[in-house]
Image 1 (tube, rainbow, N blue to C red):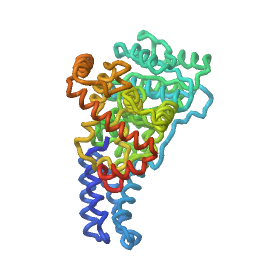
Image 2 (tube, rainbow, N blue to C red):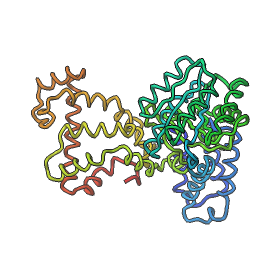
Image 3 (tube, helix red, strand yellow):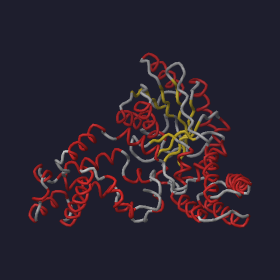
Length: 451
């Protein structure tokens, strides 16, 4: 998400870093570039105008003009304004009510609402330690109820069964009654989507809102529709009191116009971002962290949280002890590193949060893609336990057998063994306490200032 905006803004603000002092002329030129970057990212025109005016007012102030590093001050102004535009700080779910807290999910067809119900249920279960029940009142779309049942099973939360012949309000009442009996903390209600907002849809969801009196009414919207996402959410909010927005499919949205427009147009906070297809691919929305990512400064806080939630610390410590004792790093350990990366959403998910990543060569993420990791894992799985422990014994005939077994070519096996050898050398240096030396040696491979 924000790839094109990040690249364009990053280039613009980098040009200011070496500027001795800011003048009306170079501020004007820079703001023109920022304006074009935002419009190309499909940010709504009223939002762009407000943003540029706010930045301009602050950039021509005395504090900036007299600053010793005006370029850096300008970057801070842009960062602060991006944060303000998206809502200052994370707005969490209001769950401090008498259980069950009811979350009503609304949205148009195709926005990924049912999948998001599953992701949110898992997020509540894993990070908030809540017991969750989900129910579908979508009696129109074929197999909608079955889809939610499958999703609930995948994430391990309770599913309340319903029937297309029932009235949505009756299903909602019965689910609420059952959630109370089972002492559930949260009840998530998946409503019917339509191709567009219509009178029938709004009437039905208003009735559900009246019956359930939810603590949260969340509008699920596809971020790839750009400013239309903000306009759809506004039309919906005019008819029903929304408490927040969930932006889906942000991993496929290179522009990010919806995230930057939606708060300004609707006045409602973005609460979550859907960042992939997996059940775990849901992130709480932190405007200040996203602003930092847009400007290429990374999001180390989110990265640390991601690692804490997904990495098996016991396994990592075990590997560290093994390396430190000089017992070596074998192909089984190498495979485990891939599996840990997969849990964290893959390499692209991590790279997105590292400082300086927009300035890395464009081909690098392609060299580290998940498909290639899958191939490498298949190659290791085709080896015998002895070969994984002692890779040195893998020669001609063994390589051919491994390639056939994994559906790859011999050169793929050679490439994996070469990458493994490089990783093994790195681990040896770490085992000898040479972490600082190793990082200094790698310094030239990273963008300026990153190390």
